[in-house]
Length: 213
Image (cartoon, rainbow, N blue to C red):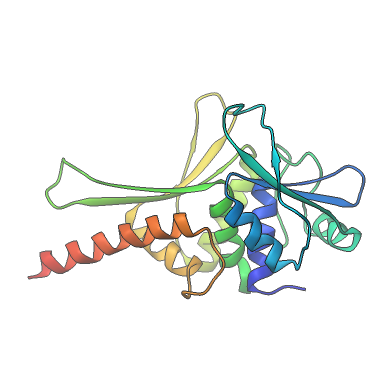
């Protein structure tokens, strides 16, 4: 069952998805219909994408795709996903070969990147990559797995109320980690996030070239 695209889809389910308590249905919710269409294509789903109201953001638009698949549901249980996973999420069984693809799905779901020119140092352009989760054990597992597989380490942060946590990678670590996740031009991903990443990396590369002259 495992391949690069499926691992990406599992990353999306881990972050933006949910398992119904009925033992059959799986839901994926997103602000981006593009993401849901990619997900549906990977899993060969014909289900319609519908709008979904959110108690967290009543004024914002969210979309969802919901489908029934007992075999996939049971498989997701076997790798560590559960209904009501928000704060109980922990270690997942993801093949090392496809961990970077799973991680890219995780980034597209609940992750982020941001970049800026740091005014404290001339010609210093900063880049950060992060993963957000309400479960600290899950982020601890991700941090450990990234270090185990790629030798890249990040820093743990919380929002001060311990309602969610962030695993953040600074500039050099981000460059290395993003290269692992976007290992070729054709991997499934959320294009608006990839565009933002490519733009930041382009600035870094141009700036490095200017400094070497």
